[in-house]
Image (cartoon, rainbow, N blue to C red; front, side):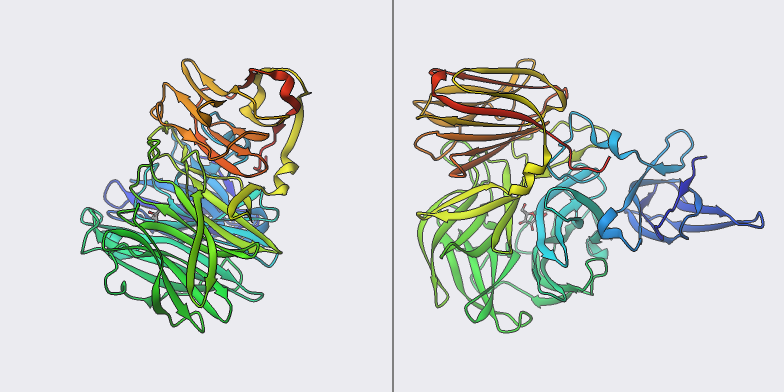
Amino acid sequence: MKKVNSKKYTCLEIFARQTGDGGRVRVTSGNADGSRTTAEKPAGRNYFAWLKIPLKENTDYEICSADCEVSLSYLSGSEDLLETGVCYLEKDQADGSFYIADQAAWYDGPTRETYHFSPWKNWINDPNGLCWFQGYYHMFYQFNPHGQRWSNMYWGHAASRDLVHWVHLPVVLAPQEEILENQEKVKGGAFSGCAVASDEEVVFYLTRHKGPLQDGEDTVEQQWMMRSRDMIHFSEETCVIGQPPEGASFDFRDPKVLWAGDRWYMVLGSAIAGKGAILLYESADGAKWEYAHPLLVEERVKRCFECPDFMELDGQYVATGAWMEHYDACGRYQMCRYYTGTFREGEFAVENDGWFDFGSNCYAMQSFAHQGRRISIGWISDFYEEHVPCENGAYGSMTIPRELHVRDGKLYMMPVQEIRALKGKTLYEGSGENISLSGIEGNAYRVRIGFSGNTFFTILLGKDGERSISLVNDEGGLRIVTKRVKSEGICFKADVDEVRELEIYMDRRVAEVYVNGGEAAGTKVFYNGSTAGCFALNAETPENVVWAEAVCMNSIWQM
Ligand code: FRU
């Protein structure tokens, strides 16, 4: 039987569900006098119970499960948890004992990004509670620890010193007990929300959802609040908004809170009379909220806005929101839209709007401010069902954190400069010619190109047999083109008149493209069966390439 040394950890957290009577998790350690101490906890009967078993530091344990399945397990409770993160355990299928998983091997496969954040395993969606607090950036996220599909929602948690290297932290929130116990009839859990950080504490706002399997008038979405002073312990939640205002849909979720002028505002995603709406609430103290009016009504959205955001940026106000169940004219499904304008006396006057990301695999973006920067992270979604499941895989990841700006009413975004720390070996440097790179080790790279004027080109970013992803610029404009995958035929078009500069990030199964210093950004998943990457620039007038550089990108995970 394998042994696990607890090192500085003091708790085993394990999600276990019975497969037979008496299903349980057992933890055994040897004592100095030769005796053995055993702790046991029963697995959940119909659902994965979240078991917490105390451990002594620096002690060898035998951990095993009997008559139950385990979806996720890790060691937690160390003093420097924010620095080092949890320690994941995996199960030896031969004898059923748990062992400390090898991080390096775990993260090094073709179906897992190396420098985009993804969970240890299983399903992830929206970023939640983004903030900086006492030296660490925090990212919470919508998480299903039990499988590679969306299900009842938990909040996962990760922290980072530099926005680039993350450590995984314990799961923070679970679905309501009554939901877990009646999963055949109801669904829900801890839905998306935000964080407001001050020097001493962080206040969280989130939606608790409970409703039938098909959303409808019986669906209940309420806004709840909780606090933390150390980002390890979290208070009980209290309900701050119990029901939608009159006239608003049962879709009523994803609070985002900001301070503007002399009060707190909360924006919520909803719909009014069949039109997507961002609702505005006000508060003097952040705890008692009053409905003001819709901040924005969007006729083009029928079901609802999801995950709205609202911020002051470069002297303007910017609202963003995710367009649920919407197809645009190019065939793209569910994208984020931004709106820029002025905000005076609670009224938002929109002056301009545009797509947040032209690749349409970036959804539910959320932003936060830190030291004068406005940073946003989006969920790398898969609305065209291109995901290839694999054992122990993660389904979904997060975009590179982007720094946002407004210029001439247009939203600009570029990767935060910290990402440059991941720069690895140089693959190419040159100008005035086409480029062809193949067998790129790790398939994790960045390419930057400057053109002397708008240039027609095809750039191959990934290829797997007949399947491919390219970036094309011609009379039809700049766009991502995929072949022989489910998204083939959809036009992922950037809203730019010409291409002068490109910054391209390829990371195993994700491509992120930044155009003209952030005038447009596009994210698209592309599954590749190998870890060897390719890149080929085929320009009609290669003499227009005034500079080009390709580098490998290092992994963000501690190996
Ligand atoms: C957007 C969303 C949110 C909701 C969450 C549930 O992707 O549907 O509106 O809070 O995901 O996981």
